[in-house]
Image (cartoon, rainbow, N blue to C red; front, side):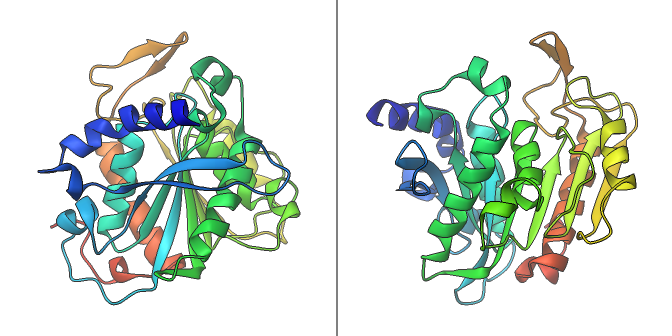
Amino acid sequence: MRNALRVLLLAIGFAVLLSAAAGHAGTLVEFPNLSEQAPAKLLGYLARPDAGLSGMLSSHSNPAAPYPAVVVLHGCGGISSHSAGIADRIGSWGYVTLAVDSLGSRGSGITSGCSGRSLDQAFDAYAALHYLSQLDFVDAARVAVIGQSMGGSAALYAVDRELGAQYFEERFRAAIAYYPNCVPEASMTAPTLVLIGEADEWNQAEQCREMVKHARADGATIALTVYPGVHHAFDVAELTPGMRSLGRWVEYDEPAARDAEHKVRAFLAANVGGPSAVEPAEK
């Protein structure tokens, strides 16, 4: 676990550099995993709207706690400054956020991550939900989950009653999946937003269309946005210009990234609530 903590420190170090001092960043936390799940402890990056970098970025005065919260799940490359950046940005909208390190906590690397650990991540999301529900500054009834790529798939698994959700009584209020591997015949326990590029070579947009088309009537609504000509990882600004990753193209697309961010903010406000429901999307 010490080695995993060092990896996590390195991974979010770039996010810390965005602030004037380390004290302005979020907090590294270690929290219990679910019983009978390995490892016994998970690592994460916790941001809250009234402190740290999220507080500095905020464009409004936050009301008193408890706050709604969002669990952040990374892609198969592991937790990174991008993961921490998502946590800080959503935190600035008025949410407590917890970016979970699913690979480092297990001593795993990119190879094992990209071979598929979405169900592990879905379980991690519930461990994070349980941890957040114990914090006195979090409203346990208003917690969403968001993920990218492998983490996006895990977010879908977490709210599909035939997958991860069947094992838990606790429920997420909403789920957001960036460019996931969509599931067939979905039956969601919470409203779900899916954002994917038409040109994605990792996960197929058509599969997401099929998921929406064949979603079970007893499930919550699924909103799908497909961006024409847009590739995998379109919200990762560091991927400018694009490149091949494990043989597949990944590339940042600013218009799609901005539109997706606005949709995410509006979706959270509508389904989870919080200060962002009445604030403009930009300063």
